[in-house]
Structures are given as C-alpha cells and as structure tokens.
Length: 115
Image 1 (cartoon, rainbow, N blue to C red):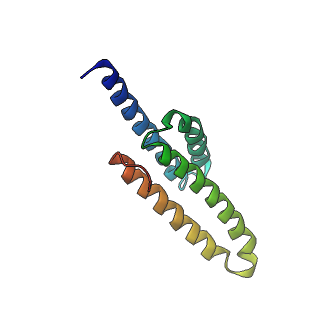
Image 2 (cartoon, rainbow, N blue to C red):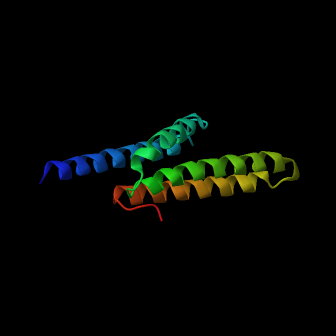
Image 3 (cartoon, helix red, strand yellow):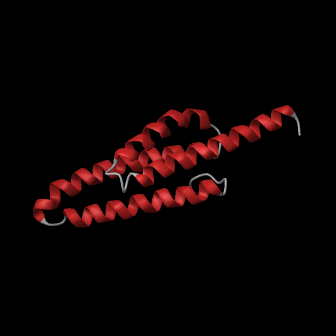
C-alpha cells in the first residue's frame, strides 16, 4: 500500500468516526432534551466540508436537513397542541427523525452513502 493510499484510508476512517459521532449526538438529543442534538448539528456543519466528495458527505447533509425538519415540525406540533393534533404531529416527527438517523447510522457503519 502506498503512502497516498494509507492517507485516504485514514481519512475515510476518520470521516466514518465523525459521522458516527454526529449521529450519536443527534440520537442522544432525544434523551437530553435536545441539547446534544444541537451539538450534533453543529458538529455536522463543521465536518461536512471535510467529507466533500466522499460517501460520508451525504450523511452530514442528512443529519443537518433532518435536524431542521424536526425543528420545524416541532414548532408546528407546539402550535397545533391547542387544537388537539400537536401530539400526533410531534409523534410523527419523532418517528421520522429516528428513522432517518438510524438508517443513516446503519449505512455509515457499512461505508455506504445515505440514500
């Protein structure tokens, strides 16, 4: 293995670890009241440019877009609590986020891009 190939492998391992950290923080946000989710999305923003052109770039984009969609759905859920459907919207948002984060996590573990 040449030195350049070793550098590429090390970078891929590092990016995979960063992807797993981002997903871990985002998932931990479900039990921390959202604080770790904020840390996770900030981490994803910081690391996304490092992953440009790799299979892990799509994971950081997924983490960021899913976070913001969850924020929007959470606001809608709060506003619609008064008419009785806010709980259902909140539940749907939670299931949606868990699905995307867990799917991304499993695909990252397999070194596949988020699809």
